[in-house]
Image (tube, rainbow, N blue to C red; front, side, top):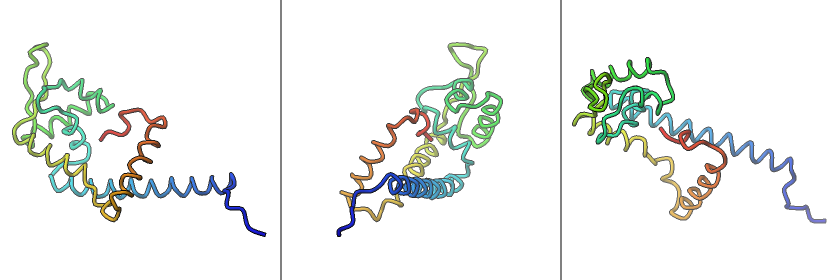
Length: 156
């Protein structure tokens, strides 16, 4: 008698569990590579995330940055201090509300932000995939990522 090749619910659960563990492993490897690249830029992950969120062409009040980062404004004060000390942003009076200070990305901040975007896009873990495999992986990740994750949970 031939054995059935149709997976059982138990087989599917085991396969799904193994897949999730591998996805977490890949995410950890990606984070490791990103953290190394961020450190090479002289930044911490939190400071890098703040710089990444800033639009170089649009000054942003610290309260808005706190909202984008999903953290307390007091945390953003420390991040803004570090960004300013590194010469990556300047605090300027917000023309729309002179009581507020807006964060403005400096020329040096633009350069570091561009390098940060390269670090965040590091794809060396995918080098072993063929173009067809990469396209398949992208399609599968898109299918899975549409499964309930709020849009901002995928942003860095």
